[in-house]
Picture 1 (cartoon, rainbow, N blue to C red):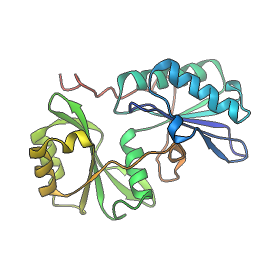
Picture 2: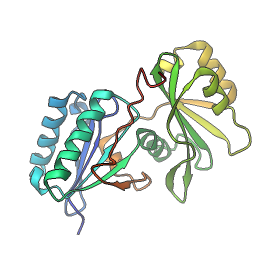
Picture 3: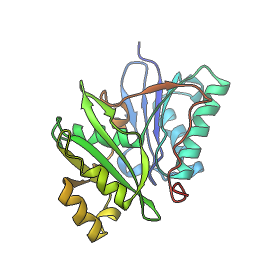
Length: 228
């Protein structure tokens, strides 16, 4: 029997949450009802999701959490919620990164060939960019490079690698709005906007889930001042 498992991604300004019930069904809130990453909104929506599925918070047996990189507030709220559940109940913790979720969604939507490596590029502000390189290995997303915040020069160097598989870049509209940077990225690889994310994708089989403890469930706060 499948465990009752909650999945939460609050690394973006809009939070996603989904619930896999004991019979293996995946429940989620409608896409237009997804909440912001403010703490009260996120916790209220988790309670709403559980109640709508006939599940009490005390019934949860596992929780998987997106640890970023991304929104400071959203990550802090999601991680604190998961740590609290695990500290006071018999709840198994696991983690994944936002870049792994983006890559899993992109391959699910056939935005890039399976033999391409994906470079996810997110705006970290202050002329820095969150980035990671990922590959699909045996139908599972794998990090080729760990998430890091790079300046513009280092980002272009990372994206222009030519000694491996073909590369597809996935990035935000705010990055593409910088015409010089967008032009430079397009000279290195095929560039696409980020895929649309949906709550059920938090349970994609290709998404790598790493078991963890309360002590090592640590968010990747890579926004704004990371490079300092």
